[in-house]
Image 1 (cartoon, rainbow, N blue to C red):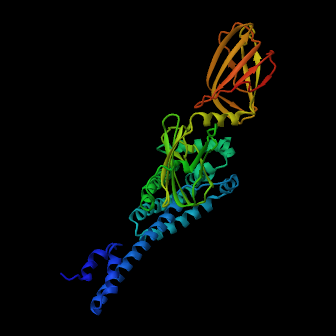
Image 2 (image 1 turned 120 degrees about the horizontal axis):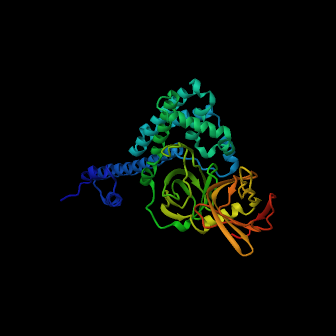
Image 3 (image 1 turned 135 degrees about the horizontal axis):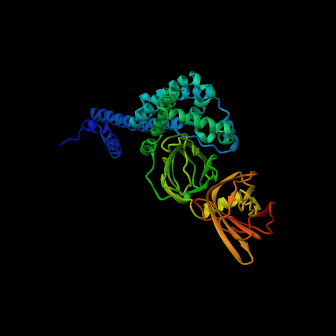
Length: 456
């Protein structure tokens, strides 16, 4: 049977086959029949068009994903200066940035990548609703306190980029408490609008969780390449300050990288953060900043929450066209202990002791105050041992709070029948085996005596 190249067109026009093209080209050179040559020429043209159009389509899909991921993922900040600049973004600028994102997402409606179209539409719909809801809240008389702006900022730029001194201050804490109180009150009109806004932020966050699956289409197959990256976590001991996540590229230059970071906490709580890195040079480090967010006292909802209490480990997925891998990183243990030791190395503890004094009506109970310097704030259990002439007695005070330069609550001593000559104070910090010990000697009545860390 005579070979007719035209019969190949239905198959190769849809998906060009690399083995067909050389075969036809060889026949094209050997044939003398001009009509036969014309047929082969037609097929070669279709093959070439199909090959390049498919390549172009793949490039367009990758470019569309790049635009999408760049819009809806969390930003990576390399320096504290960048963070400070981000903190200065006004409410008006936040809304303007939203409109810019919406316009860019609108352009993705005609993408050839169905996953990109779906995620872009989901994000765009929620961003449009967030703009409308933010404007509605801003116009309400109750918003004169600025509570709405605080919640809007936490959802749009992330609580990790707030000024921590404001959030931890009386004004910031008061605004957060009033906001959640309104939200939890079904009869509060202002709270109802804030509640809708919080829900929209949750929907937008859900859209980002779809990105890693969409990224797979343009990513290399997963390989065991964990040794090409170095991870470091610096967890804050303070609930109102930020945790830092660092990841260094020890391999070759990478581009258009989707980075998924899942943090696992002390109580099994987990949270995912999605990032996009357009260009990641070899031997360069990326930094993500995570926050406990603005949290509802009911423990069920939050805004801007990107971290967990007591980070134990991080499960990291890296997806790119050149390299894809999964890294399971354990933070709990030596690294975490070393971090806490570094944070607290300049800490100093002072103690003032008050002996028992019997009174006519009321007794002055035996006890002491503590004062800490060298570290801003610390929540911990306080393990105390009282000593005198070989005799000792121990108390443990659960879940106490120390703030730099401020006198603590009064710690009542339980059934201690002597005035101690020295007192050992061990701070038991949750989630770590590192327990700084302070040996305070030569105790004097009603006079502060100080000690630096005696033993880790």
